[in-house]
Image (tube, rainbow, N blue to C red; front, side, top):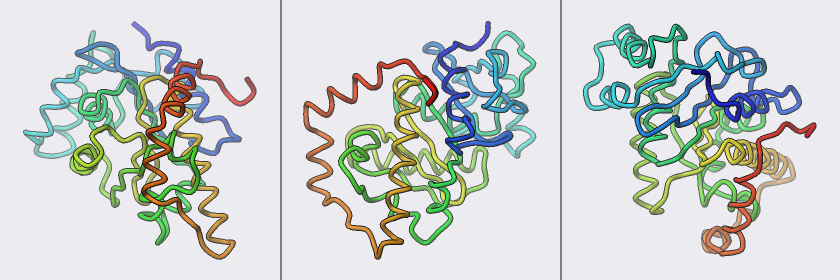
Length: 257
């Protein structure tokens, strides 16, 4: 069975050239299929041109087992991921499948979008990376991306990175009592956590807007961030929560739509 069209649409929208979020083989996406499995982009496919056949359907259990019983090395990790494919598919799942599985499961979200946007990576490859994750510059950034982002220092992609993402994501959830919407990987890229593909695109777009604003504020003499109290207030306003739900329910579309 092929991946849902909503996942294909999201993947292609993220890779539109004017967005500058992913080029060539960069980035990957995933979507929960049911309680036991999920779809994830397969290696060798590009988000810009991917079709339903470009995703592998993976069982959660073998991937999550690796977190508590790590494999001896990358070869064994790859073999576990291959064996986790449903229906004996031939598509090899992305090396970053482990963090997709963990985030979908631990955070009770439905969709993950991982990209390498140029505006975001300008900051994540700078001394301002942690500040970008910690602070918000405007109300819409706070509402759509959450009160702050999880910041993860550079770690080699694969299970080592997934383990560090899990540690820092769980710390965030202990602090805020909810899952993050954005995870920022130093010298690497952006992860958006969402309940729908449309919401994953919205969160990605807003995180990039936040990066552009901060970049401009730094050039203009330095940013003036929102206070923590103002950020938490706007995030919890009933009208903003309602508006966010409406945006999340919209169909994923490209900018030309």
